[in-house]
Amino acid sequence: MGYFYIAVALLAILSGGPLLVVPQHTTQGVIFGGRILLVIAALLAIRRLDRTVKRVGVSE
Image (tube, rainbow, N blue to C red; front, side, top):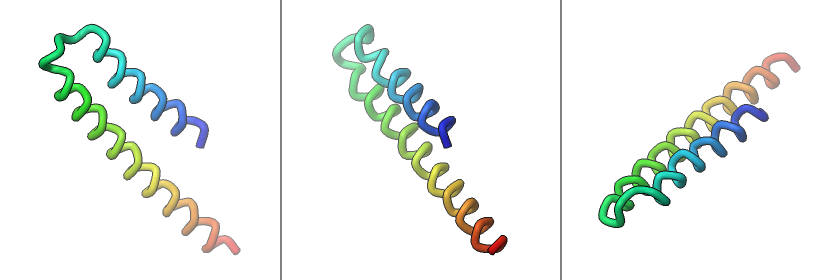
């Protein structure tokens, strides 16, 4: 599960970092792209959690 936190932190840094260097009129696109990446990461985390719960439930 630690890898997920590292991946989310990298996504946040990579989507927030360009805000410091891109022109003002393009920041909305960077923010929107970052939000999309974070939603994808959340969906993948939910899917992984579901698989883990099913695996633990089957083994009991």
